[in-house]
Amino acid sequence: MMKAIREYFVEQQVLEADVPQLVARPDLEPTIELFATELIQPDKTYQGFLIPSPEFHLKQLLVAGSGDIYWLGHCFRNQEPTSSRHNPEFSMLEWYRLEMDYFDLMKDCQNLIKFVVEKFSQQKLLGSTDFFEYGSLKIDLKGDWERLSVAEAFIKFADIESEVLFDEQKLLNAAENKGYTINQTTTYDEAFYQILLQEIEPHLGKNQPTFLFDYPVSQAALAKIKTSDKRVAERFELYIGGIELANAFSELTNWQEQQSRLDAQQQYRCDHHQSSWPIDDQFIAALKQGLPACAGISLGIDRLLMLLSNRESITEVLQFPANRLFSTS
Image 1 (cartoon, rainbow, N blue to C red):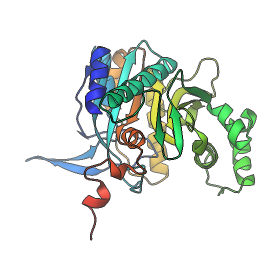
Image 2: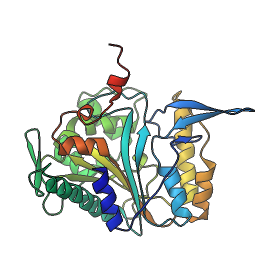
Image 3: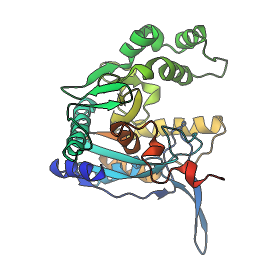
């Protein structure tokens, strides 16, 4: 799989980049907890973290003039239960395309996966380039894949209209009426994701891959706000067989707006007694120089391999899953 991915980007003249996996100031995304460590020097000890994403450093390379780039390596996320879909250390593919927006990147992502499937088929690992089987599903890869907005998905699968979806109090009320756990501290995003995970995600990508796009602005801290609808950001996620596989944005290039959003994330983490750290000033300094117009995407390699090899769990495609490495038996 990694060989096929690299072949695709060679053909596309996209440069492979290298970034550190041990950093001082990682992403402040509130839903992510990190692996903390220390860098011990003779005169001082520094707090360090294993990266949850290579995004900040790849964008610094874009500012420096790298052109289109990709990175293929390991990321780390803590305090998420090891499961059939998550390993604390996982393989990530992340790439950036200049002068593309998120709709262009949907096509690029589709082309990449079809290229990998073709290589698998050539090696007799798959029987066809037109489809593959995952459990009882037959995933059709032909033609352009389904594109479904978040608003359309909430109407179709959860019977929630746009006027409710984009109104905080109305969505909280709707979630409570559906029987979800809602109290005085429940946020809009928490209510949103309860509905998304339970009522919408299981239906996505069942017959063909689905791009779910235009997420509420509160859930896309690194994405551009859509010009034609200020309620949403230019973000999409790719689903195959009900499994979220990739996350992408038309990238935010305004450094002041980015600073404001990171400040808000940092405040949220402090208010909710989560671990916190200073904002990456080198990242902000790079944005001040000017991030070129681009779109970026991250794709879970372990999940893609699990899907294409028709396995129920990523532990079946990992040589050394965490639940075996840390087993006490």
